[in-house]
Image 1 (cartoon, helix red, strand yellow):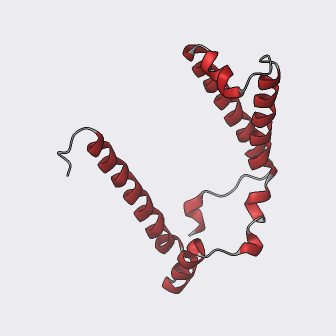
Image 2 (cartoon, one colour; image 1 turned 180 degrees about the vertical axis):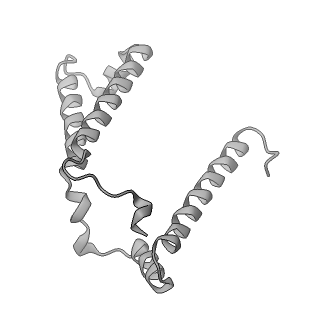
Length: 132
């Protein structure tokens, strides 16, 4: 399969990456958790869906939603000031170079804001391998 070319080669490479990622992720739970029963419980909870917890925990984190809302607001303002044409019309009229630069700057600024929001302050956490 490694000798494939063209589109099938790209699909094979993507499949290899996906399988490798999931294998490492699944086996990490056995490395991290001291007992096999705990690791199996953790893996079961990964695939279990609990509707009561759907909008709790990390899903309600401001550091997740703030950059998304800021981006939506900026996109709305840009659409409003683009002579009231649709956003897709505006994107198609925009030269590809400037659109790419805008997306790159927007992505960079979004990552910067996200990093600042997620930055820890106060006591420095212990190195992860000292916790085992």
